Length: 428
Image (cartoon, rainbow, N blue to C red; front, side, top):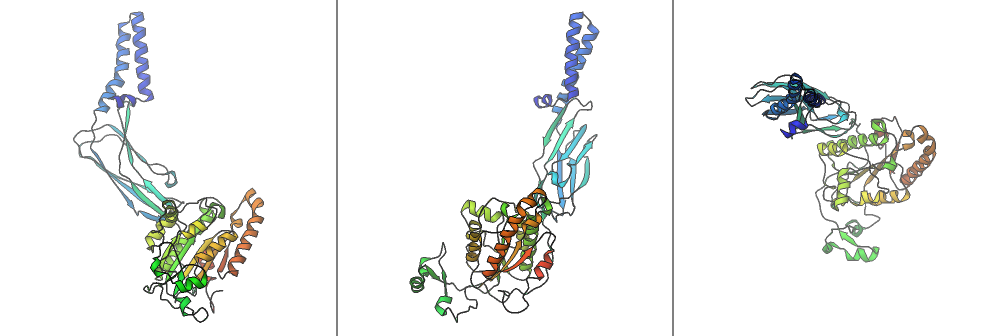
């Protein structure tokens, strides 16, 4: 009852105020007929609140999404099945399903009367031009009296999630020079120059068993070296997405970050389809691993679905350097192919990339020229500096053995990817 009284509409409050005013005037003027009208006006909202407050609906709601995962710009349909499981009828109902504004306007449905065993199905479309994981629901029910004097709202608890994934391009088949390289510790190695002993050890990493330390190599190199473990042969790919705020320009779906996310999803799925055990750094799992000081999740191979979910939920972050994003990765097996999608980097960032990439791995970089995404005053102020930094980054990466493709706004990913293919010899 109290909740119903709190739900008095503007009309209901006006009736109460008019009734009280008429009653006071009737008492002062001695007009009994006016007093009856005043009592009626004041009592009507109270009676309506009592009726609405005692309304006990057993309304059941079932929601389904078809499909529950779509690429950006593709429509999905939400189906609501409403049924009254109780025996009590109800008057005017307003149903509103809560959805984020990026999915469209909130759908509202008005039902003039709900009878026992009443059932109805309604469908409405949702579409987003922005990737992400969006909550659809819960449904909010508003019960009103026939005179519009009282409204009370109730919210259902159930909701569903719609995953809007970045656009995935079908990439042409190219040879990167890593397809025949294994990822295990027993993969073929170039030992003619380094010697067989050096080929069977690697640098110490946090968590390695001290019983595996190779003391002779440690004494010669001046740093802890451990023996490699024998692992099953399998091609592995490590993918890195630079989602730092300082690396990107533009806003919304046309920003450089969205191009990079679409590229990461396309390349990652392409590698998974070709049999690579693929991991990804730079996404929400990496940020969570840094915050919780646990790297267990970041070096687990991803399925296509997991990779799409990871890319769909990528957000810009304010890390100034790449080092914490890369050092969280502790591979039990070293990848044979590393692919980085970067903005302009500092010399320290390039050093971190070189440490992340092992000497036997093929390194590929998609370097975004962020200046081409800058617009207006932002372009005139920062374009020259960004271009100079990007040029320096490209030169430094090529000098350290990375194969680099410079990406500008409007470039088509399959075309860029084709340009990275080997024509002859190794990648240099």
